Each structure stands twice: as structure tokens, then as C-alpha cells.
Length: 604
Image (tube, rainbow, N blue to C red; front, side, top):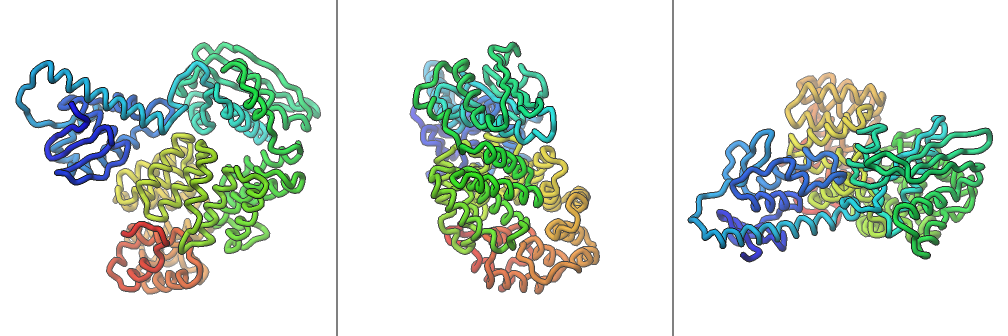
């Protein structure tokens, strides 16, 4: 049999990964295509959800399998013009799996049928394995020298920043050794939370042979770090050591531990890799300590913690002006503040993009290979050039090329692609971010933006975000909107009310509540919530709230002021969401949508 499989009016080129309908190519993303290929391998037979998971989502690659599979099936049916309610091609068998419905065909000679089945299986296997290897290498393969570094524990909560920092530096250093296969920190953290203290279960979930665990505690003026290298299946220690160090000696400790682990896991590292393990970000122990503290605070993603992170990075740079990693993180902290409307003590929000770009440039002058600095530059360029986003995509591509395992870069690149209306590419980047770090609630939120008009999927994605971070006002506000457009008014209001209690006085949170209550019929309360808002604010959700309460002219007035000033780069994308559907056909609205479309954005 050739590489093309035909069913009904469709043709599938398995080798090229393309679907055609009567000679016309139908766009189909990679994961839905893999589902179709597996169904084609078993025409008329049930392919279970577990079989699909094992073939397409290997262990440790994507934590929200149910959401991913439901999305893939939905996209496959859309491409085929099929429906779940009246299936003609893809049938759902509840709680079991899916079946490709095939028309009866004349009997085939047994030998020919056998050759066809072998050929199809061979081609599908090559596609699946090649695609998975391309996306997930090296995490999806269980090898003898595979290892995961568990997040270290700290006896004192004041040392949590140090435990996290040592864990992530050790993981990064081991990742530079070609003879060792290392799991990304986000995947490891998720597995630890799922099976706390159960070493064999964690190892099975991650598909690794070895686990490194450790703990940090202060003993007088010194820091004691205890390390064990465990065989995952048995939880028996293959190696262990205790390192007593003064604070000034901690700088070299991750390299020392990495050398020992590499020796026990993958054999002696080549000389070039040995040199890499000894490369230090800074020669100042005090600067290194401030850098770790900054990373710890920035990960909290709140206004006050982001400001604290900036202060720590600044101190790290003051102590070592060549510390490119700290300078690059400071630039990224400015990007986070600008994107989330966080006020830093010494800079208005409007100045954060230009100031952050200056810091990113300073970092890149010191180290042009800093993935974080390129990531910060890409994000900040979108805000500095909102009408064109000049240089933003290229900077993100450079960041990812330098460090393909940078989950944050994949996520933020996905955000930029969303703002440009390039939804298929955005979907891919967010899934890559989640493959590297399954605990990223914010990536599930951004996926919900991508699929906002697929209401059931958007709700499921925001459910995942809330499950990962139930106390996040950010996740709650987005689930409120997803539930609203999914028809769950009660759930939408519960989430919107909670978001406001979690982050009181926040205009954006209040705007979501105003939208929800107005859509539920209480426009008076919506207007009351908005009564104390300042006269000018560029956030699109505030304008959406005005639309919800019926003040269309006021919403359009604000939009026109934003257009004349310096609009945020995601304003055009926001205007295309369901919150503004009531304005479709309004001449002022249509003019604004056209005027705000960034150069390079996909035309509607």
C-alpha cells in the first residue's frame, strides 16, 4: 500500500501529515492528525482513550490528557465536518474511546489485507514516533541515565528560596550534560505534588530511573545540604553526601553536586561538559543569593512580590555589574509588571516597557546568549511597538532557540501569537509550555483565550487553571468569563465575586464582575461597580464592561482615546472576543478593529 489512505471523500497522506477532501487540503493540527492516524489503523474498531494516551501523550508530557484529547477530537470532527451528536465518521463510545465509522467494502484477499494493515501500522508508527521524538525529546524516553531532581525541602521557610534555587540550578547544570537525561522542573514539581513522599510512584510518573532529593538547613552560621541519589523503582540510595558550607561557598555547590550525580548516573562527563558544569553566573556569593531571592519572589506573580524581585535583582547587579542572568531577570520582571498592570515603586506603568528594554539591552551586552533576556526583550517590544510588534516574534524565536526548555518563553511567545490572531501557533506554544511545566495555571488560561469560542473546551481549560491555583484571582476571573459564554451564569458570578474578594479594589476584577452581573440582567449593579473608576483606563475589559451595561458610546469613546494614544498590543485581540459581539456591524467599532490590527496579525 502507498502512503495515502482513502475513506469516504477524504484522503490522508500519512507520511506528509496532510488531510484532503476531494483534492482540497484541510487544515488539521498535529495532535488531531495523530488521533486520526490511529483510528485509521483500526477502522471500525474501538480505540480506547488509554490507547490514545499511550500513543500520543506519553507519561509526563501533558498532565491534562482529558482536556487535550477532547480538544483533539473536537478539532478532528470540525475538519471532517462531523459532529458528536450525529456522527458519520468518528463515533464516541462513552467512557471507552472512539471508533472510525467505515462503509462496508468488498472483501479483500487475506494476504493483501495483511499487507495493507502492516503498511498502515508501519507508517503510522513512524509518524507518531517521529512527531513525539521531535516534540518531547529527551523527556519522553525512559533511559538508563534518566534522572529527575526533586525540589529540595527547607527546614526553615525563610530558606525556601535557597532550596528552590539550588534545585533549579542543579537541574539546569545536569541538563547541559549530553550523557544525562533530565526532567524539567515543572514536570517534577507536578509529580511531587501528585505523589508526595512516594518515590517509586514519582519515578513511574516521570519515566526516570533515578531521583535526586535533598534538604537544606542552617547549622549556626553554616548551611547544610544533604543529597541522595535514589533508584526510583526501589527508593534505595545509590549515592549520598552531606555538604556543610558557609554562605560564601554556596555559589559553587550546584556544580559540585552536578558533577557527582553525572558521574553516578551517566558516567564521566566529557571535558567540555566538565568545564560547563564549572561555569558560574557570577563570582559574587552575595549577588547569587540576591538572584535566588529575586527568582523566588518573581514566581509569586503578584504586584508586591514582583517589586521585591526587582529590588533583589538590582542588588545582585550592584554587587556584580556583569551578572547577566540577574539583569535579564530584572528586565523580565519589568515585562511582567507591564503586562499585568503592576506598579513598581519608582516607575509609572506607561514607562515600564522602555525602561525594561534598556535593562534587557544591558543584559544582552553582557551575555548575548541569555534566553531570559531575549524573552524579556520580545515581550517588552510588543508593548513598546503595539501597532507593529516589530522585533517581538524574532526575539522570542531567538530565546527559544537558545533554550528550547524555557517554558516561560514558550508561554509568552504563545501570548504574542494569540494577540496576532495566530491561534494554531499559539496553541502549540502553550502546549509545549505545559509539557515542560504542567503546573502552569496561566498557560491553561491562555489556551482558554485561544479557544474562547469553543465554550466547553474553554471552561475545561479554566477549570484546570483553577484546580492548579484555586486562590488565584487571575484564574477565577478568566473562568468567570468562560462560564459566562458557556451559559453557566451562576458559576460565572461565583467566580467573579470570589476574584473580587481575593483581589479587592482591582478595577480589572471589578470589570469582570460588572460584565457578569450585567449579562445576568442586573445592569444597575454593573454601573454601581463602575461608578468610582477613573475617567481613562486602557484595559479592554473595562470597555467590555461598558458594553455589557449598555453604554456603547462610552465604550467606543474610550477605545478611540486608546487608539489615538498608545494602545496595548492585545487590544485588537480583545476586541474580537465575545464580550464585543454586540458591537459587530457598528461602524465606529469596525473602524477601530481595522485601525488597531497590528502589522503581521492574521486578518479575520
